[in-house]
Every structure is written in structure tokens, then in C-alpha cells.
Length: 121
Image (tube, rainbow, N blue to C red; front, side, top):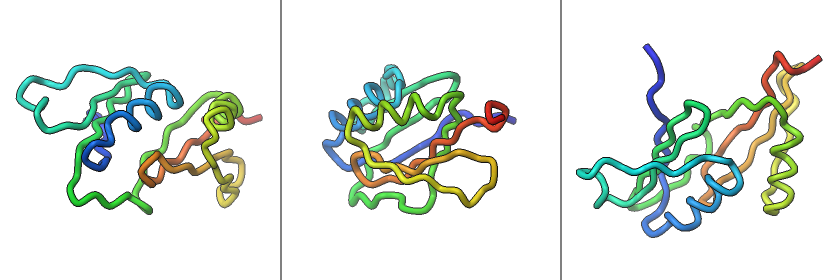
């Protein structure tokens, strides 16, 4: 078994903001949705073997607890990208030895970004 994709919700018309956040800040590449799904709105993205589907949800309610966690090899590099894009982040130190932050996408969906433990010395 393997994880095929992560589905997150965005509001109707949120594609431009989502595209900017996920491609420019998070480094994902947009991929074409299959023809039968193109009329539904949303976006499909990929990066490093991670497939992310952003689907339009009406009415939209951001995910404030449930969230994806993206493991990175250099947390400081992505924090610099967050700083440049003026994206607020909060460090969490509840797991000893794990460097991680929480952010929100442009719509308030919770996202965790952690440095891969193998990188920590």
C-alpha cells in the first residue's frame, strides 16, 4: 500500500491564490487534471513524489486540526521562503528533537512542515 495523494479543500474561486502559494512558496508543480474532472475547479500539484489535490468545497471550512505534514531536509531554507512571502509560522517544540513549524495556507488550512529527523544532529 502507498499513499496516492492528499486532498485539501479550497474555496470557490481560490485557485489563483492557491496556485501562488503552492507553486511559488511550497515549490509544487501544477499538473493537468484528468478531462472528466476539469470542470470541478481546484488544482492538482506534485513535488518529490507527493501528489496534492486541491478541491473546491462549498461551503468552504478550513481544516484547523487535520493537516498534512511535509518533511523537508532543510527547514531553515523553507522558513526563508515563508519570510520572503510574509507567511507567519509558529514553532512547535512538543516533540523533543524534532524541528517543526505550523503555517496556514491562504485559506486557513493548517499545514505542518518538519525537518527530517535524520538531518538533526
